[in-house]
Image (cartoon, rainbow, N blue to C red; front, side):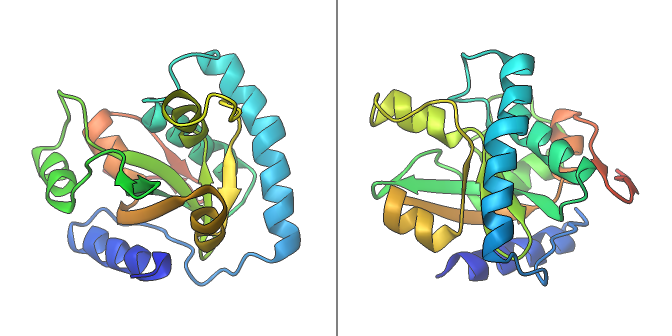
Length: 193
């Protein structure tokens, strides 16, 4: 399946669970905006993440990093949504995320254990913005790969050039509000839990 098909299935699943995602799936991201969002993410957002979280611990920090990136893009008025799922690196599932596991966390309403999850942003129809994966690539695959960068790109390009295959399973910032007690706001107001 292609990324967009996984994303649509994740959105449908989230709506059924009443997570109320606000996925901007009808918003195309022109090439000039991809470049602009990449620069914004790797300058302003990255500096903010380094100030807030320091240079260490990003490998397993996708939840706070993703939540911060979500807030950053929302405040800039850039249409985005949080996505939860799996990333396959060089053909290997990296987080052992499952749909059933995510649904179980949602139904329980909180997480008191380590979640098998990866969190990233989807901007517009299908632009991936991932502040955490570069650190993992640096630590586990290539120590020459810069650990502190925000990966931004179309899913097909990321799979082809960086061997990163993103598999969306759920969408919606409300998921983190409920399971991790992280208050998040959409540009148009607070998420109702």
